[in-house]
Amino acid sequence: MQLLIAGLALAAATAFAQGLQRSAPKDVVLGRLAVTAPPEITVDGKPDRLSPGARVRDLNNMIVLSGGLVGKSLPVVYRRDAAGLVHEAWQLTEAEYEKLGSVGGADSAQGAQRFAELLTLIFGARR
Image (tube, rainbow, N blue to C red):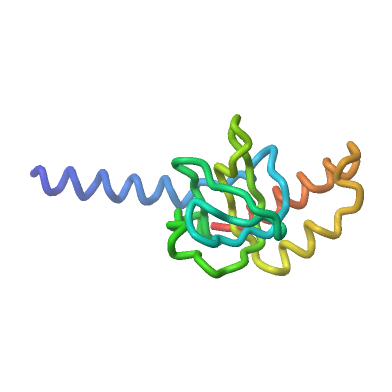
């Protein structure tokens, strides 16, 4: 009986997860992240650092360990913590990176709105 209940709970959780829509991260910046020696990184070629507990997500929204990214340069959108360290990063494809990078004047209200719209489209298409 307990096995049946556990099986039903697992099936319900799986069905629920399939119906979830992934939302785009808010307040992020476009960049190219390279892990040199965790927590040491570079962002757009400039030395930087990952925060304690930093999360880097791959194209499937799975968390990847920074040690597995050593020597790789990844197009990402990222967010900093209160101390100014990179705390969260979401990997992009090269095509997504180019598309987001082509939004001119992201500092303007219209540019920021277009960037957010494109980001929503990109993350909404992912499952």
